Length: 185
Image (tube, helix red, strand yellow):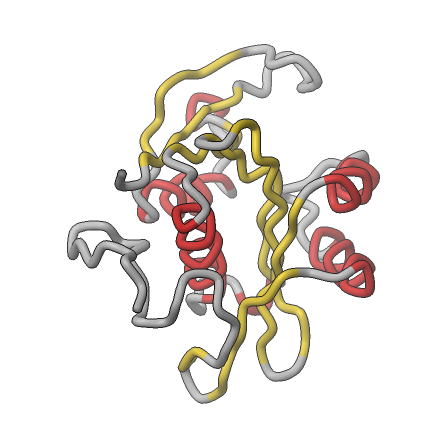
């Protein structure tokens, strides 16, 4: 029996499945699953990124390729096809960062990203992680496509803790918002 806390105000408190378990999850008219990614999923994940040019710069696919090989990754599969992914770097036994997360542009807003991130958070919690970080373009950049991204992270319980401009590795003028989600002890 899972000891995952069922706290209603936590939007990412998920179903009664055991932490990290794979299996079907009801999704609209079909069924989706979240599973650990394999190397065979990388090309499809990069296709997802390629379909989101408003969100990812041309150098991102190579960064994802590198991070995919050294970090843990998950995919959400919908109707038999990888529809999204998340790449996570565990920084310490209690802290992790979601480095990359994306859902196919045709499936954005369908709940697949939420399902994916909730499963990732549940798995991390079961492993003892208590703080998860995500970085995104800050609202002060005035770039409208990122309004939905900011709302997504806030909706998953992430809190903005800082803005850094320039963040090392980011171009000046692209302020980085740092969000964190505290997971229950």
